[in-house]
Amino acid sequence: MKAFPFIRFMGLNNLSRGVLSVARTQVSHPRTFLICQAKFADSGVDGSFSSRVVPPTLLAAEKEEAKAVLTLFLKKQGLSHAVAARTINKSDLFIDHLVSRLHSIHKSRYLVGRELTTLEIRDALIPYLESLLKEHGSVLVDLVENFPNLPAEGKPVALVSPSDSTLDSKKLKAVSRVSESGPAGKLPPHILYLMDLGMDLEQLKGITRRFPAFAYYSLEGKIKPVVEFLLHLGVPKSDLPTILVKRPQLCGISLSDNLIPTMTFLENLGVDKTRWAKVIFRFPALLTYSRQKVEVTVDFLCEMGLSAKSIGKILTRCPNIVSYSVEDKLRPTAEYFRSLGVDVALLLYRCPQTFGLSIETNLKPVTEFFLERGYSIEEVATMGSRYGALYTFSLTENLIPKWEFFLTMDYSKEELVKFPQYFGYSLEDRIKPRFALVKEAGVKLLLNQVLSLSYSKFDDVLKKKIKKMSSNKALNDTNSSEVFNKKLKNDT
Picture 1 (spheres, rainbow, N blue to C red):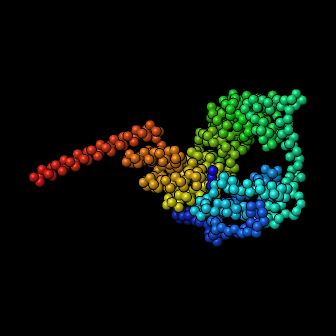
Picture 2 (spheres, rainbow, N blue to C red; picture 1 turned 30 degrees about the vertical axis):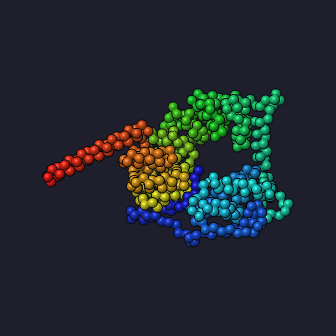
Picture 3 (cartoon, rainbow, N blue to C red; picture 1 turned 120 degrees about the vertical axis):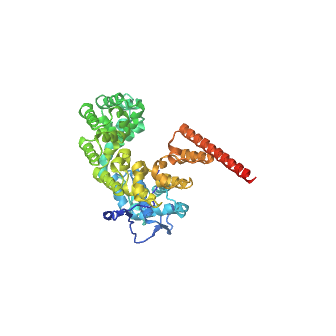
């Protein structure tokens, strides 16, 4: 689980002079005081106040997370996405109130400068929202929008807008179609067929809520031919439920008119035809995209300097790159990495999933993390080029604890530039046990020797080092003895 970025790399300047330096955003107030009238703390009106001194960047991130939790909660109560979004836009004071609760509940964490994880934030806020719903019921939305004022007594607030009523009616009808038994007392044939494949009724109802058309697909004309085709490609039967939950639209695609031509088109672009089973499991939506969308992504990869063979491998290993917007995601990310001096084509080839991350939330905080620990921009670029997955790791759960342990390992900082893959190994299962063995043996190994070798090879290298160290010690002892005896003889 990823925690919030505490710091952000804000950009580079002086590029025209060939000098790279960090330009931090200036904040008019170095500290932000969050003051919230917590009228509904503990689901009651107590008129109390709470204030916390919180770094502005962390406060902004917490507000965004609180908005996400509230949005999800409102949607679960029946609001459409659009209505929930409108409510969130009117709920600034209530969001401040939620963040204030976080600071109250986790006071000790803030005192030691530890950021909360997403899971911790959800665990703190969702029970509170549930208590408000229990207390205020149908006027909860009014409460959220008008906080801290109590909603008028008895004022009804519809959780579903009239414009959504028709859509909800269609969803309910579709769900009943897949879940209710027919005249013969059995579920529809296509539902029984899918249940035989390993899907359960709740999964099928969930699919139908998201995609009502699924309830009306013909077994013989749509679903069965697609399923049999996937099995023929080598997709394990056990993977089919996952694939269909991810992309139920696959069952509505014509094999001859759409699916097979799309696969042929992708194979011509370099997708490995022998690995279709894995590609489809990773990202079944790939087969439902238009050729135009795929071509836009391929054109971008060509523009970045990747060969046709490399593009084929990227689409095979990371088919979901096609889902990333070129102008909103891929190009800005490429420009960011290029500004650091990272080899963009190499990074795309080695770790294309990095380009699906947020620049502000994921990439810049990682860059800033290493800059603040004394690494130069050139060194950070080298690390990123050598190990693109570095940018996919959480600061609080991965980089920070592993960095702190690295400082106890008696290696120079340059060792991480040579081997940034260090951050990809488990701290408890790999790094600590291996280093303990090296330390116990009293030998010195390169960081990549400690971590990258298999257990048998690591054991061989360790034994050879110990043997060599013992031989050198014996030789030194012999030489010292000879020198001593010679000196003693001369003295006599």
